[in-house]
Amino acid sequence: MSDWIKAARLRTLPLSLSGIIMGAFIAKWRLYREGGTWDWRIFALALLVTLLYQILSNYANDYGDGVKGTDAKRINEAEARAVASGRITAKQMKNAVVLFSVLSFVATVALLYVSFFPDFMQEFYTFIGLGVACILAAIGYTVGKKPYGYMGLGDLFVFVFFGLVSVCGSYFLFTKTFSWDMLLPGTAVGMMSMAVLNLNNMRDIESDRLSGKNSFALRIGFRNAMIYEMILLQLPLVLILIFLGINGFIQAQNYYVFIVMILLIPMAKLRRKIMSVKEPKELDPFLKQVGILTFTMAVLTAIGLNFFN
Image (tube, rainbow, N blue to C red; front, side, top):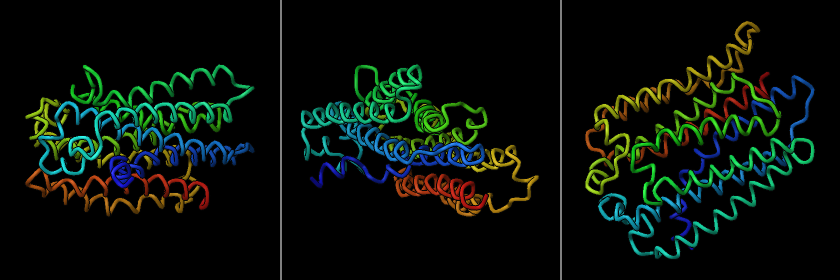
């Protein structure tokens, strides 16, 4: 059991929850202003679906990299990866991927039933298709003949699914509407998620070069990937600030809503520490830190909107 828990890579879960928290509690704030209702069942099921997607993605990643031999060339991480180390066989991991694909789909249907049935059937079927796309994206990062993670497209998919789909999609589940300003927090979470993936790819840049995994970091080189990382970590709080500004909080002088801006200091310190790294393997501790900061950004935004407004 401990091997399966390690393979699930629980340290990645706060990152996957961030988009749901951001979208759900912005929806709660907006529904409260408009006299609408916010359903805790939707929130609970959305968290469950996201957790299943994340575990599915991690198992599929472990399986895909394991059978392709990518993890065998990772000196720093090979011991931690289940298939590469032999603690879990490729067949067992493949079965787990199938199982969690089914569980994810069932949970998705349950979430959409509670959210849309019976008054929003068109939206129900549209989101079924989106759910299937999420499952395929989770598997397709490293699995298959042409996994997109091996073609340098991982950053794009992470931005779309961890950012825009997670934040804007969860917002839509509650409000049944799309608001263009939601692209701002969606982009903020998406960029933080890209920052985690880019750190991961920067850390593994040499082993990926040997195994033929052409991540975006490998394609642009370590130095340019570092510049790219700084941009990804610089803009999210700016986007959140713009979101709060265009919703009138500055004019209303409701400055407590801006509690999320206290993260400017730890974010600046984190950027300086990352920039001081000389060896790619030294980047590993920062993956968890960026994930926690993303989660904190979502929670503080939710608190500011719903408790200080």
